[in-house]
Length: 337
Ligand code: ADE
Ligand code: ZN
Image (tube, rainbow, N blue to C red; front, top):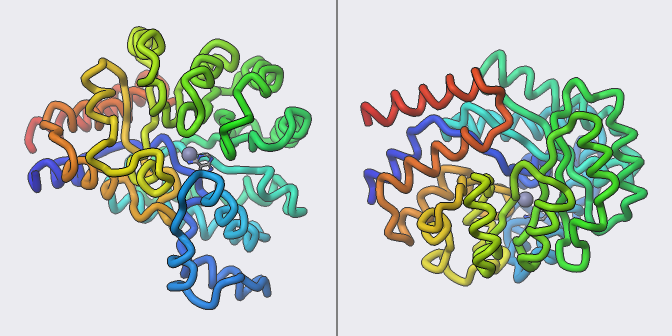
């Protein structure tokens, strides 16, 4: 078991499901709040951590939006992103595709350009200093209207050279993918990649809608797809990547115990899951912690772990030559590990 944990930890890997605002560590949150003169409703780092006890997605989201509200300036977004990138590099992440929630900032009066500037400068520095490649995906908040999402897509037009795709996140139940059919069609027309959170808390029907209506290239989470055999066959047949987030699933009570996590069932059903940290500061761990938690709780074998690592690159939005190069790096590592 320890061997498999270190095999996964030391392996080059990609992370495909990471909300940059969810990587906001309490110490940095306090520092940025202080320099911006913003008051947090917590007295200490320990006080913040104690509040991270969630019984569902909404309880987490309420605290997550509160946390990101201290981000005001370009430098704040840079510092947040750089902190994640250096932490991810320590976990041997060599490629990352990060989400950000522009509406979580623009609705507080922060310019779209300021968020994008800070994030993309850090991504450029990661390329130069850490050798880490990246893609940037902006998510629409699904509890807001499609009209709002259209306005956000419009905001993105001057930045299309640095934004690779759109996603869909926030409160899932009651906000099905079909609510965003037209804005996703427009995003696809504009040449953007599209992904969506589906089947985290929402039913298998939402995964069908993400596939058939939004025409996603990846499904974020997808846990509840396992309730529908035809859906499993469809996802497996298409080789659709599922960006699975085990510690998130545990913290948000999508699973009651890591021993009940469906990752092994997904692999055995021929699905293509990869492992991600979602909101690592809130859920108790970065990507290697997620691998370790699964390996400790479940009878995963070496083939399973290798497959999960491979899926992270295969499911990425890297172009074909870059994908081949990172897969070759992984194969070299596995051959000697
Ligand atoms: N926003 C940040 N993390 C999320 C998650 N796990 N599900 C939906 N929206 C999110
Ligand atoms: Zn997520």
